[in-house]
Length: 98
Image (cartoon, rainbow, N blue to C red; front, side, top):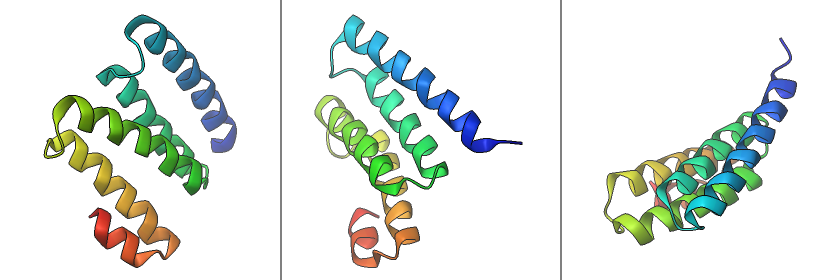
């Protein structure tokens, strides 16, 4: 099974969904944050941690703005970001996120 090809297809769909949601709701909407979160997972699967972290940071910022810094949804993003930093060997960064 060609997972890289499937992930590229997924990324194309995520970009399409992102465009639709941003046009419909603007940049600061939970639907936009969710797409960024999903893109982060796909990029992590593609071994693109920098890009994954960028997407997750976008998701975190939107969720933090809309839900507050202590929201569970913000914590879930921080947890995943910490896991990515851990896989990269960036243990101090991972601990601060986790």
